[in-house]
Amino acid sequence: MAITTSLATRYWLKTIVMVIVCIVLGVWGVIDYVVVIPNAIKESSRAKLQLDFIQPAFFVEVGAEERDKANVAIAVAIEEDNGQDEEWMNALVLFREAISSGDSNKLREAQAVVEKNLTKYGDVTPPSKYDLPMQWLFIICLPFGFYYFWAYSKTAKKAKAYRFDDDGTLTTPEGSWTKEEIKDIDMERWISKTGKSRTTWTAKVIIDDHAPVLLDDYIYKDMHLIIGKLAHRFYPEDWTPLARRVKVEVIETEEEDIVEE
Figure (cartoon, one colour):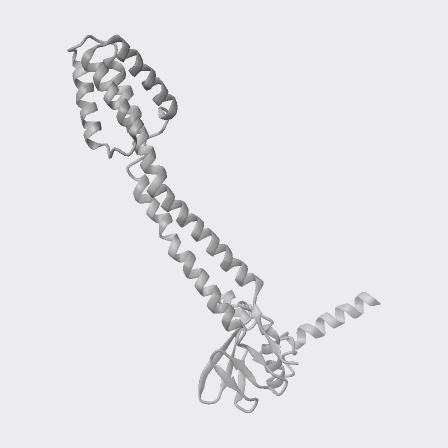
């Protein structure tokens, strides 16, 4: 029966997690950059205007310096406002009329509006000047999320290409070779106890007139069966068809016999 491979759980799970994390962080950064932080800036500036300028102007006589400062601040706010928030624009107009005229009814109405507004966003903390630039650290995660998804799709497609037939033919994304064309397998890194641990899941097939073909059991499930078949063919005294060292299996067999006794 031919041996085929699929994506190893350790690989696809890690990749999918990275996709989710990167996309979530990226979307979070976009929302903060476009919505949350601009709203916090807007609401905290409105609270500051009412606390620092408008409220103090309510409790002094017409013509006092506090009223002049409040009128200037209101004029600047009206000029800089984009006009999209009609309720806030009406409040600014009311504040200006109440402070300029000194009408007691207007003052009471304006004070009620200030209290309502401060209840709404008086406790909003002004964002730091670094908050907006910092969101780019999250936003740039977004393309990485799509990259990991692309890598997952590409690798999943490659996983279906690996095949080892009963007649010894090896098929990989790089090509297909018969038993006679396969000359050797390099098991130097396979389950080695030294060097980079990531490479201990790999072996290289030596083929006529072709660069060595890497077989990676970390990424592809059941790749060790293909590696084991080839290793056992070329080095039957050293490797089993399951890509395990023969001496290790001998030791385990002896240990099992001792336990049975």
